[in-house]
Length: 155
Image 1: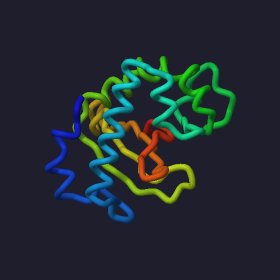
Image 2 (image 1 turned 135 degrees about the vertical axis):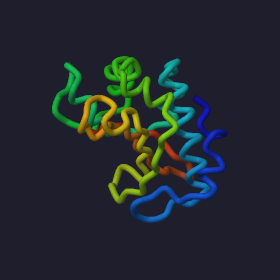
Image 3 (image 1 turned 30 degrees about the horizontal axis):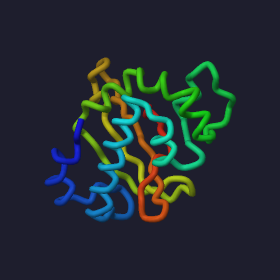
Image 4 (image 1 turned 90 degrees about the vertical axis):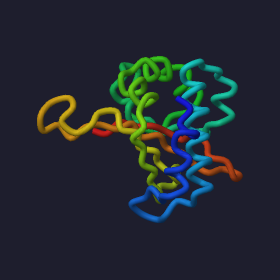
């Protein structure tokens, strides 16, 4: 799962963006942040997770869970205590940890600077005509470091 070493040549030769270009240094830092995040998801350490996360976590996939209260922006403590276990055992998360198909996207959202789209299903993989699927990891740059700010699945 250590993507950084696999992706370094690709990251240094591409900008990975549909909007504003992402600096190569930022793309390397983003992939380091995702690698650390995934390691901490697999072996949860709540103190460490809180340190690398924003105060509020955007969680579109939490709406599929029984405890969902209708707000996509939740306190990080709530996210880690009530949603992390189900997410880390989900097919989307498990497949994302093995995927090498990654796109970085700059965004102008107030709580997210970059979304890391990780392909979990290729087009037509689930069924003919199915568009495929991605897990999106939201990151916000705070004091020069990328922090986990949310996640979603597409579609």
